[in-house]
Length: 329
Image (cartoon, rainbow, N blue to C red):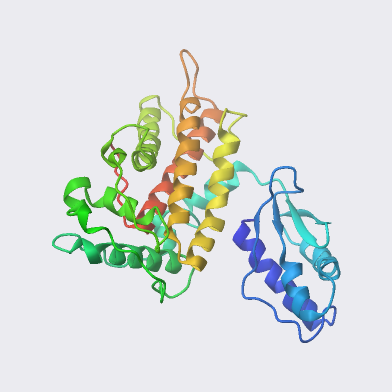
């Protein structure tokens, strides 16, 4: 179960609790609720403070709301148990889902890849566009794609103030290329003026822009290298390979990040998440293929499938930002 699924499940549980008379009839049920990764030292996998916001307008204590919701949510598939901490925080302990299940969901186009987000709008035209208006167009297009990825009609950034690119930056597209320029424009909140650091042109891992696209290219290279060794990726358990857990955790956070990026009209959240996934993949990729005289095993095939899924998610995320993901770098 993803964080987005949890958020929707909480909303449904609230509505049913009101209908069944377990919560006051006048309680206002929000359209979405906050579900976030449990902080270090916390309980479970995810947590939500929803009971506090709901209780404020219902005239009941937060813990009372949480005690109504917890047993309802604990019955859902994918949830092992729900614990209440403090004055009413809901903490979700998820049932152990397999790596193979996640990989198959990516392969089936249910999550992660560009195809799972529906048709993309027309790309932004960079050639001949004054730099003063280019940043607004890039941001508007990214917001439209991200919002549409959540099954909502694409909307712009509304009345939010968008800081233009400084005039001194001149022809940023000519200097850095369309992809790198877009990355810089989307890396900061819309109200902040973007900067164009020298590392945008650097082709090594000191550049975040390079690392994300390079990680995607490495995933594609692993597929080619595995084919030369006579095997291909198959969903399964990666056999405790170094970095597998961190990569899977980063990938499973992607839906929550996208949902938040859409809600707040904040592409910079997706930018940061792609860096997290890329770094996790680059750490993991050295443990995918057999070494020395090793023969390809089921674990190697599962590791390759996980790396390929990560590459698909990176490509999908870059597509939402309007940036290409080449197979070779």
